[in-house]
Structures are given as structure tokens and as C-alpha cells.
Image (cartoon, rainbow, N blue to C red; front, side):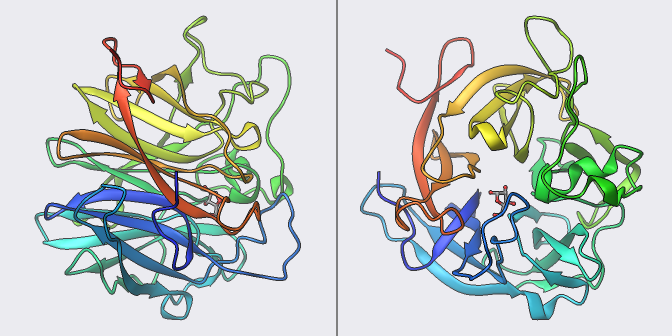
Length: 330
Ligand code: FUB
């Protein structure tokens, strides 16, 4: 399957349907001399482009709307504009772009920027979202209009630095580290409800997203690298159920878990995508014109350079039990 976007390198695609069109909010990968390491320093992105298309036919044209936001415009950011997401707030009639980046102290935070159109340009808030940390924000607006922000990522994404509390950064856990040991539960992504403007967390603050192993009914363990959450949270709803999907990082799977509430708990449901060419895997799932689509990335276009990725899309299906499958069930 060829990449959807070929004019620049793009990754971590968050796709949404706005005004009857598909809008894609990816990371913009760029060449760098920074040596590859497990902290992800080589993912040294400095701006965002927004893309749109009216059709997902293989021959459809995808429009690059140009730079929507860049590092120099964001007062609190030092570097690394990583995986973004977007939402539309019907009350304020604003489009919101959520993005992680390192602040001037090198700590990842999540920022928000707003625009009058889905393609931007976006104007950033001067400070990151209060109480935000780590990477990979993903928004989900439920049928009742309530918006949630999921986030978190291990190793270079610093999620493991917050084991003492949501706002306590433990620098000794920085780097490619995570909890391990017999019966140690895995670290969860985080989720918080957003306020009426979709710009801050409500007073409830953020909670841990718990994924249960179906065979035990207990949280997935930290050493279960084939199933534990690593990064790339995404939420979508299908037939009243909440599907939380994510990457397993060093084992390179995209997996999902299903629950009855946006807060979970979610029960592990299986894999959506097997490892692709390149270290990272990151995705979004969206319904468009009655069909379901998995947006993801790989490194085929760059011939395997991990930090030069390209966005792809493939159709997905559900079987009779609501399991996600890549082949259309008979
Ligand atoms: O694009 C930089 C990082 O790589 C993202 O934040 C992760 O999800 C991984 O795809």
C-alpha cells in the first residue's frame, strides 16, 4: 500500500472528519544529524502541516495546507513537536490543535492552539495545559459533547517519571526506562475531562487508564511487553463501546482494549496491526462515509530510516462480536 502523503515525511496521523472532509494532523518528520537513541532525540520535529482530502480512494488527491504551527510561535517550547491531535468545539466554533513538546527545562508538556478553520493557522496558548505532562495527546468528544484528552508515552515520552503522583516529575526515571518485576502492573496512559473551551482539564484532574487482561480480569503487567501500553493513545466509539487503542512500543504492535466508559477500565481485545518497517507505530481510527479507516505510518518511503516516516491508510472492519479485523468478514 503506497503512502498517502509523499511531499514531506509525516507520522503519527490523527484523522478527523470536519465539514464532510477528512483532515489529517500528523507529525512532520525531518532529516537530522542527531544520532538514533532510545530516548527518541532523533525525532526532532519543528512544525506541523495539516492535510485534507474529500475521498479515500487510492487515486484521491491529498492537499497539504502548509505550516499550521511552528516552534518559534510557541513561547514555552524548546524542541520536539511530537504527535498532535485536533478537535472541534461547537460551543466556541474553534478548532483546537493539541501537541506535545519539551519545555525550556526539557520536560514534555502538552500545549493547545486554536483556529477558526480546521487547517489553521493555529494560535498557541502562551502556557502548556495545566497539569499536562508526557506526550501523544488524543482527544475524544463523546456523543454528549464532553471532551476528553488522553495522553502518555514511555521512555523518551517520560510517562515513567510520574510514578509518585500526577504532578511530581522524578528525573531519575528519565530515558528508556519503565517499571519491571513480578506482578508489577504496567503504567497506564492518562485521561482527563476538558473544560467548556476544551483548553484545560476540569477540576477532576487526570486519571490512569487501566487495561485489564481478559484471562485474569487484572491489570496488564509491566513485563507483558506484547500488550502493555507504551504510547500513541487513541479513542473511538463503536456501537456504544469505547475502544482505547495504543502502541506497544518496543514490541511494535498496535493493540486495542474495549470498555463501557471513556475512563475505562478497558479489557484487552487484540492486535490491530503487526509491526511495520520502522521502530515506531502510531495511528488513528475514524469513520468516514459509513466505513472505518486506520491511519498509521511506516518507513517504506525512506527505506527504513526510523525517524523519516510516511502516513498510510487502510480500511478496517468489525466482526460480529465487535472485534477489529483487517479483512472484511464473510
Ligand atoms: O513522532 C514522535 C514520537 O514517535 C511520537 O510521539 C510517538 O508516538 C512515536 O510515534
